[in-house]
Length: 124
Image: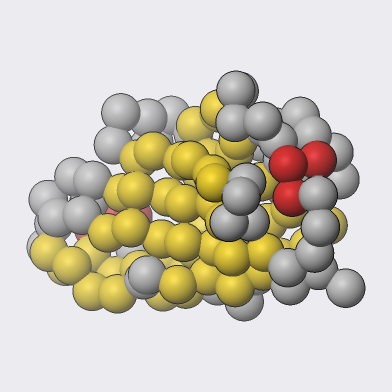
C-alpha cells in the first residue's frame, strides 16, 4: 500500500510564499509521475502541477504558471511544490497524488493514490 503524506501548508498573506512537500512510501518512486491538485470548498478538485517520473516533463495549470514550481527528489521519494506570489484565490486544500505511470498528465482520474491534503490559506 502506497502512502503519501503532505506537509507545509499554513496561513500566509497575499504575495507571500509557501513550500509544500509530499513524502511517498514504497519503492521505485521514479517509475511514477506525481501531481499536485487542490480543492476549495464547494468546488471540484482541480489540477495544479504534475511532474514525470524522471522530472524531465512538467505541466502547470494556467492559473499558477510562473508562480508555482513543482520538483522531485527521487532519492528521497519526495515531491515538492514551491508557491510564490500567492493570491487569496489560491486558498484550498492541496493534495499530492501518484499516477499509474511515468508520464505527467493533468487529469485527476489518472492518479490512483492520494495524500490526506494540507490546508493553504492566503489572506488578503
